[in-house]
Every structure is written in structure tokens, then in C-alpha cells.
Image 1 (cartoon, rainbow, N blue to C red):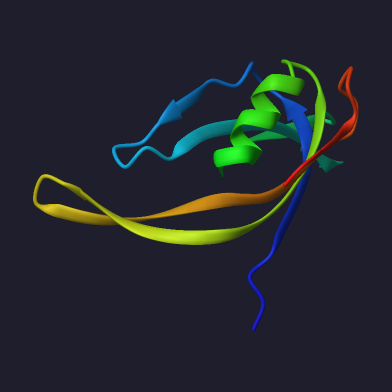
Image 2 (image 1 turned 60 degrees about the horizontal axis):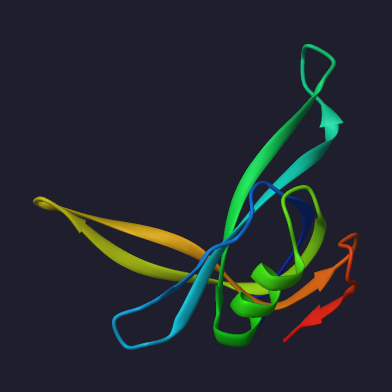
Length: 111
């Protein structure tokens, strides 16, 4: 079985690293990814996808990347259940396992 996601897109905003309740460093990597085909109006739509990074990946990505940089993210999908009042919803997260800096000022990788 395989659970793998590969995304390449532009960083929508600078990344902030936070600490979770158990002390783990966590950051959201917001990517803008244009679609490869035109819509009915003849323009390209863009998908905005958030990826979640932990520990060294989160810290290195926030340190070396800025808004507008192009990043490659290899990761996996992970589901979790969120309770909102009386209802439960399943949320799918993209967990970054490797981030490649494709057009930042300091090129490299975060693992």
C-alpha cells in the first residue's frame, strides 16, 4: 500500500513555528499551486494547500524560505476526527516528510 503526496508550489506567506502542548515544534506550510489546465474562462485556477511540518523540517523551512519561494513537498495524507458541537468531521492533513527548497535564496533540503 502507498500513501504518498508530492506537491510543488509557491509559499503563500512566511512560516511561523509554534510549539504543541507536548513541546513538538510545528508549522503550517501554505502552498499556492496553479492547475495545469485552463477553466471555462480561459484562465488557470490555483489551489491553496496547507502542509503540516514538524520539528527540524518546520524550523529549517521557516528559517530558509520566504513568501514567494518555490518549494517541493513530499509527504503523506493523515486523517483525524474533529468534533464540532454534536457532529464529528474527518479532516485530512498533508504531513510533510521532506521539503525541497527549489527557488529560495539558500537552496537545500529539510529532512
